[in-house]
Length: 422
Image (cartoon, rainbow, N blue to C red):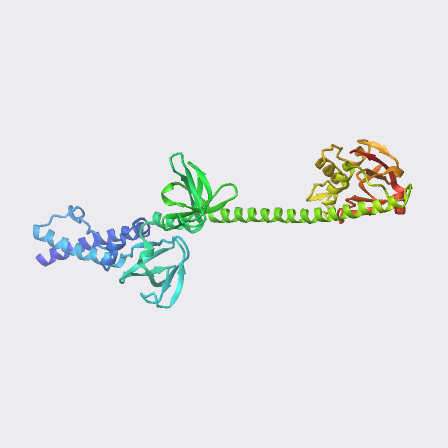
């Protein structure tokens, strides 16, 4: 009879544990994700120890003796241990890196073959610990060894570290209303290249000893400052944004330097052309007592020659319809720009510029006078007379600012007069 009771007790306990196991199985996946295991504790034990379930409430409905209760508890404990072993899982970890990738080795050694690379914040399962190395499972079925110092059970910590991978930190200068010296190299003996006021916002690039490499200002300049003079703001900026701005600034600086070189070259050419034109005019004047429209033009006053000299600086600048700057000129844009450089205000379009000065006959043209041309439907072109029957002008799309003759049949036929604005 006693054996029969024992059998009934065992059957009840097993039925209770089976029911509990079914519930545990349905919740297992969610429980695995939610639970964060301490890695150090996990490394010291072969598996996770789960507290045993209290089965006393589950058997309250059966009248059992003290001995029978003890036997039922023993059966339940054995069944629970089996369920736990079947459902044990490994602690989760996350790759914590601020740059690069984490090498996965075939053995727990730096000299072992690298079989894979893991990115920052990659989730892994820690299988075992081996003196500074973890054997980890990742991507479902891949396993290998990684250095344990680069694995954390704290996902937030891994995510914070991963931010350094493609972000810089913002910081604020904190020097109590003084100025912070920016140095060329990370040393107090290095040259001071700039100073920053208190509360200036900077971008922290990296640290070198007692110094920090920073990026600052509208020009995204770089230099070193003492690390005790900065206070992090908690804000981040993408590294790609910083590098893009620095590239744009470098390209703009290079463009301006190129423009300056080209302007200097044009100025040199203009000076030489002006000298040559002046010499030719002087020689022609000396050999002739008068001149006609085809004769060399006498040297003009300083005002007109100044306009010519300025215009010569832009020889070679491309024609741009509507252009009014050294980046590109149209005919009237060149005239307006050059006149403004000499303190003379003229209208924007050629037809209006025709009324801005004093009319000059073709026989009395002097360098600096504005010459106009009409193709039959109104004035459509203007140039600056440079002497000897030539003008400097911006001709048309696809061409550049250059010197051309006004005595060709085409120009003679369209000539519409000249004015003097100087």
